[in-house]
Length: 189
Image (tube, rainbow, N blue to C red; front, side):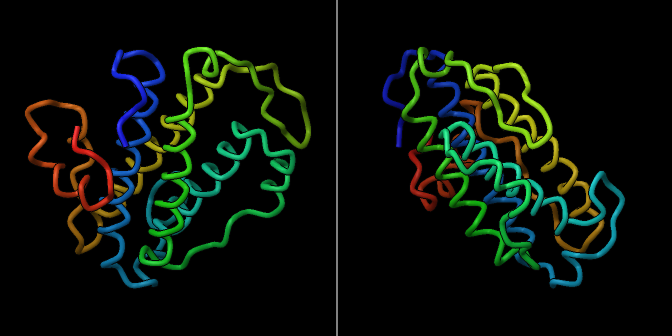
């Protein structure tokens, strides 16, 4: 699943970010599988009040943004019809990984030109100015990282050790991710 080109351009960067996204969610949700549904939903201090709420929010937002960048004409439906609320890490894991793979497939199809295209993100109560596809992807990756960090901190308040989430890009750390990338069907970087 290597990017179409290896020129180091913006399209390659988006593919790398999408692959990192899959590995980070695999690790975080893999750790959350060890929690009981009650532990997953237990009140915790963060922007959202639980791991369950935080991690379901990530999937909900991913669904909206991926639908938007794929130009799904029913994207506004996401505001009133979010994905299911998963009660535990084990049931959320396959849905999030499927969403992550959908995002990776989108990124693998991009070029510098398509990433520069302008898109209006549909909102139910306003029409925002157009934003480039690249900026929307940057926002989506930042959103994921932001809330994964919160979930990581909440997980630290449980008996489950929070996983390492930042071993994707450095050349000296290939051995720390190789087996998981292979298991996920991704080539080690």
